[in-house]
Image 1 (cartoon, rainbow, N blue to C red):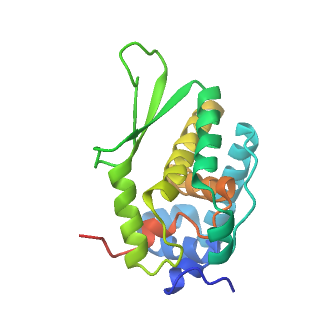
Image 2: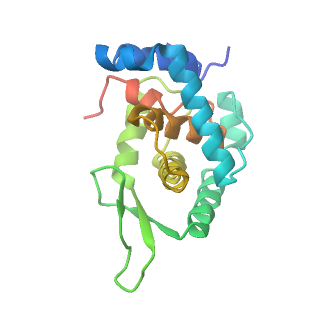
Length: 200
């Protein structure tokens, strides 16, 4: 088993994380979904379909702290996703002062008619601190998490192009599975939704 964290959640496969997620949902939603295996299947299909539509090749999967240390290149991944956003008519901007998380705005600059994705640097700092507090052994920094934030936003752009949206929970989890596949991550971004500790 790969060991990328000192707590079990970092080492769990997607199916086990979906099980954790499923049990946190309301009884009504659990009944609508049918079960964690059904949830996993629907999410994986949705992510695969969006990857095919986007035409983004998955990165080589990383499976250990050593591979992360030697092969992860946050800047290259960021540049690859920014280029894709540009092809779709979107600009990407890092906002160092925004603490409200990720958001979309109509334009970046008054003279631009292109839409913009703003990635909040401070929100990424909080996630990096949360990962450290939760036993992640990868030494995640805000710059490592920026491509994750951008990939999640690109999922939303591609999903809008596809139309006919599924239930909200499918896209909520689908964006995270899409992100894991696109970036070849050794952990699943769903972990961040399941962690209980928050940095002060």
